[in-house]
Image (cartoon, rainbow, N blue to C red; front, side, top):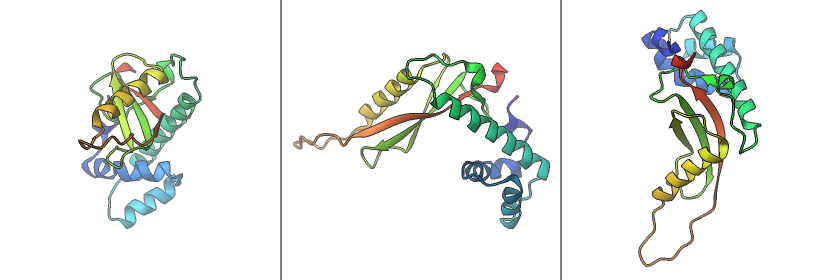
Length: 158
């Protein structure tokens, strides 16, 4: 069961804010104080549970980033998604540079475990389809780089 199914409405509303504050390195107590100042009534224990799950996922993401591009990762080392996933695995790819219309992140989902080369190849194919060329102008596409920043597994996988 995904953590989000156990959360109250207020906690679900606060989840993106909590995620951003945890990514910024803020302590759990400061996050609770920030939520209270913003008028979001979320129980302390619920915030602590969310912060703990997010930190565990960020730790798993750091380990995933250290793998070689061709290494097949061990899915038991992936973080567990806080929400339900349509597919078994979800990979977050950061896009740097390129056209302004490029999204900063792309999420690749799959039922199979993928290595980083496969993930970046899928993201690159998506971006190739998204490029907009003006007819008559033979402008070369601006360079961009891709990096896999996170890997999650479905809560159903345990």
